[in-house]
Length: 418
Ligand code: ADP
Image (spheres, rainbow, N blue to C red):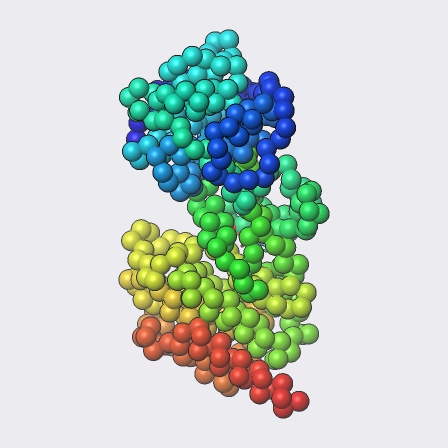
């Protein structure tokens, strides 16, 4: 990866630098645009962060996904040692990243002439068709515009804190543009880049899914810090809290309905080759109608089989299948094991599994064949299903399609008997 060894520009010279030129705003088109349009978009007086090819603090890993053909380019910001740098990323024999250099009199340049604004510098590179640096040979051919997922940070008004996530607080918020109530996960600014990438992984996975039992992604905000993931607001909050809070009011029929919802969401994920890896009541949400939605895709992987070779420190041991704990081997059938624990949590109204046992003791006992007894008032068919989900051999466990059908048939039978 080559990049020009140029000096950085400070945040005041970067994001907030005013653009000098006046004209019509860009129409809401995407990606491929004729050169003539780009010339027009130069004649605006909007700040850099409003340019459609400016992607804010979108991490490099995400940027690289967007640049597919030689000449594709975009502009972004990185923060190094609390200093902002504006970077031009180009697909050219791989991916090249060029830091915009600031001259002593506040102009912007790469190897060629300086310009009073970053927009003009980029337009010069684009129109002249000259390489950004001689060494790289990289030529700008097509500006890559923000995806519809990339929302403006300023469109989000945080209202109240509703939870605490691994990476930062979770808020109820409102989108100014649509007045929609949303949930927003924020990522602490102080986390290292690697963690920020992990944080955004959830957004990347969720944006492909559309199912009533999977929490919906509305967008990501990466225009500036703090980066945020915007999701549908599921007003009841976490399933675990809900089970504990409403334990007296919860009927067996409602519990079965929750199991069916979770199975429907998981069946959908299985069909998309997504392994969740952290299915548990704490990671499901419920709305006011008690509909369960699978959430928290921070550990998910889109693979049929996923082998973990690094440390297992953060593994939710009591929810995790033995072959994943022992060999790091994850498949959708590991999610089925966790689903059995989730069923147990639902019928125990939010108890902690293997209570009184440490993680390592629970592991030992499971390996020796121990399985939790049925919580009080669990329908026998549902307990049978739990035990199948906890088969020591992964292949002996039912797939989510079968689980859904079993639970659905039980509910229909129950409804018809009343
Ligand atoms: P993380 O993945 O960072 O650990 P979680 O997904 O567990 O964060 O979210 C933390 C808490 O925030 C949840 O337990 C829940 O109470 C709340 N929360 C998260 N997402 C939503 C949402 N879409 N709607 C309502 N509440 C949410």
